Each structure stands twice: as structure tokens, then as C-alpha cells.
Length: 271
Ligand code: SF4
Ligand code: SF4
Image 1 (tube, rainbow, N blue to C red):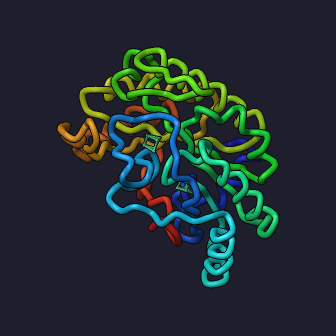
Image 2: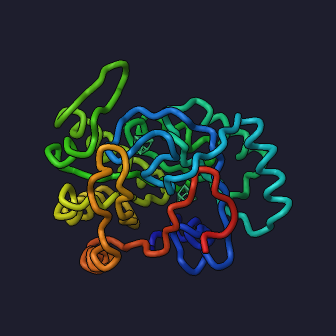
Image 3: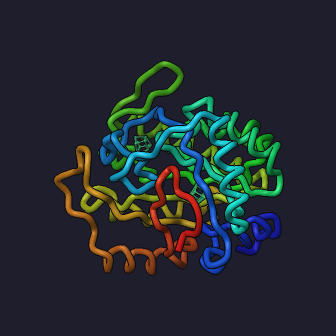
């Protein structure tokens, strides 16, 4: 990553830098239960499957509880460098997210603040996020084609309207694209997560890689589908398939290979 503003952040961010993952840790604050879209691989019983490992539901915290919890964690583990909100739903669909990050930034200005989002509200929330000290953003982009996206999302709910099919997918990618560009313009780092869904978007992820790179993303994290929800009948992609795709796409955009699909209340080292 040769952008000086970003190098500073990625030096100590374990998710953006495999070497840093050996020395520095992160903590997720589970303050965001609601979501504004419906991915077909999501059951909503578990953490947001875009960033977190489904199977165990995170305990929800209020912003005040999250701050107290963070104080205890930092006191116990001096290696914590990053504090993020990644669910259990969509962080930006919850007022508690920005309030929590403000509290955290006020108390721990030296920690890197991070969020993971589906991107629908990213561009409009960025000024508040920036003010709350956020410097690293992960956006989940599973499709840039409305037709492919319409097979992945049941609906997208935006400003009181529900959009389905290609209209919803198109709206989502437009918002994600605008958000990624703006994040980059503001000098933050951007990671894109893409869930690899066999038979649905596997042949499309090269187009996704090119589009997100052109928008300004620094790194891409291909996440193999964990079949559940409406995609419960699909088979997960074999690890060799995931590795091959990462190799194929690495000349287009740097690939993350050490993702652990952390829970929305993950804490400590990635490794
Ligand atoms: Fe940020 Fe995602 Fe890493 Fe958590 S797992 S610290 S939200 S990039
Ligand atoms: Fe589920 Fe996350 Fe998709 Fe929302 S964005 S539907 S919580 S996987």
C-alpha cells in the first residue's frame, strides 16, 4: 500500500497487514443489531455474515457498556490498536454506532477506529464517521451488475422505500461506489469484502475487483460462502477455488489471505 496517509493506518491494523496481525489486535463492539438490506445468505439469527462468522450470536451492548468494556479490554491487553463496529447487523443502520465511536474516540484518540458496512449509507454518514475518528472502512460488495446483485439481495430499504430485484441491487452498488470514492478522497483506507457464492457471483468477482479498484479500494477480501438462509442448499466453495481466485485477482487488487471472519464481538489477535 503506497499511499503515505494509508500506510500509517495499515502499519498497525491487523486486518490490512498480515505482519501487523502478529503484533497488534482489534476489538469489535457489538452495538448495531438492525440492517437495511437482506442478503440471501443471511438468517439474521447470527452476526452479519458479510464480516462475521455466523454460528454464534454476539451479545448486544449499549454505547456506554461498549465504552466500559473497551476500557477493560485495553487495560488487559496493550496490543489492541483497532476498535471497530461490525454488527451484528449493519453498523450504519444503527444510531448507536456513531455515538459509540464518538465516545471511543474521545476516550482513546490514539486507537484506529474502523467500521464494516454494506455501504448503502456510507457516503451520507462519512462526515460523522470522520468526526468520530474513523480511518478504516470495509465495504461488502458482492456484485456490481444489477442482474447478479438481484440474485443476492432480497431487498434494499432506503429512505422509507423498499427496492427489490435489479432496482435494489443497482441502488446498492451506486451507493457503495460513491461511498468508496469518498472514503478514499478523505484519506481513509478501504477494504472490500466479497462473498464468493458458487454459481451466483463466482464468475463475476473479477468485474467486482476491477470496479472497486477503480473506485479507490486498497484491498479485497474474498469470503467463501457459508451456506445458510436462502442459499442453504448451495455448497461452499472449496478452499482451492478460493485460493485460485485470489491468485487470479491479485494483479488487479491486493488480496487479503488471513481473514478469520471474526464475530461482531471479536477481541484480541486475529491469529
Ligand atoms: Fe475492522 Fe473488519 Fe478488521 Fe473488525 S475485522 S477491525 S471491522 S477490518
Ligand atoms: Fe445480514 Fe449483514 Fe446482509 Fe444485513 S448486511 S442482511 S446483517 S449479511
